[in-house]
Amino acid sequence: MHRITIEELYKIIQEGNKITLMTAYDYPIARIEDEIGIDVILVGDSIATTVFGKESTIGISIEIMLYHSEAVSRACERAMVIGDMPFMSYQTSKRDAIFNAGRFIAEGKCDAVKLEGGKNMIDKISAIVKSGIPVMGHIGLQPQSYHLYSGYKVQGKTADKAIQIIEDAIAVEDAGAFAIIVESVPENVAQIIQNKVNIPTIGIGAGNKTDGQIIVINDILGLNFGKIPKFVKIYKDIKGDIRLAISEYIKEVKSGAYPSKEYIYHTNKDEINKLNKMLKKKLYKKQ
Image (tube, rainbow, N blue to C red; front, top):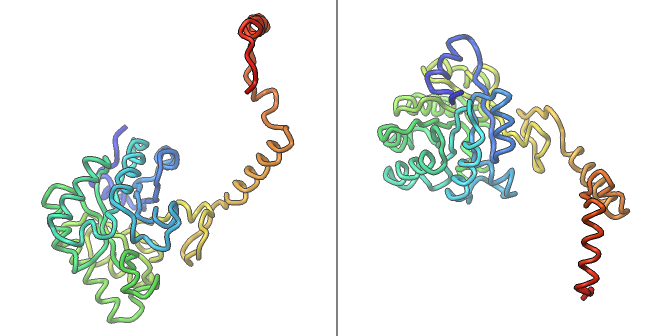
């Protein structure tokens, strides 16, 4: 089995199907996603909030992103793996953008990288693509720039703002990106973008008219401890199951019920007798 290629992603759309994307940050979850059939796994900088409990995606280091990217990549046989370039790993210069994107391919074992930005980032996108590394764009709400947006808000609600996002999408495609994530924009605006570009559009909080959808794995499993965005559907709330399992463990350990006989290793009688004789000779004492 081989990982899905960009050409195969395009074929999924041409056949009238949607592309499925999901985040993963570790080997076990990535392996499950891969085995079930997720098309693309994003090692998202959302790890900052979902795993490390930070208030935003700002502040997660490229070293942490690379470490988790390699773990996810090791788990995947079929799914394309995309590394999310963290804040200030590409904004500073084209040289930094190329160098750090290369680290995701060489060290993180990713198939492509994702970065945020529209017209303001086309020089970085173009430079990375020209160096031979595929780039997925990200427009609309850009979490790394949430200070600029005064928080996590829906983008493109006015005609002027919508035009800016549409122009961003066209610019990102022209710069060489193979796909674009469109985040937190009205569905009708996302549909216009989908009609204006020839590369796949992937929605998150952008309605149902895009070529695919991406979601944060923690959100659909109910493992979100903050405000839950409107677009998130909790498919299985496992937080309660986890709490119950931990509570039962605590209770059984304190009562002595765990570990019970079936969870304990035993030595055969002959070896026990031999051990007891050895102990008598050595006269071990409890300190």
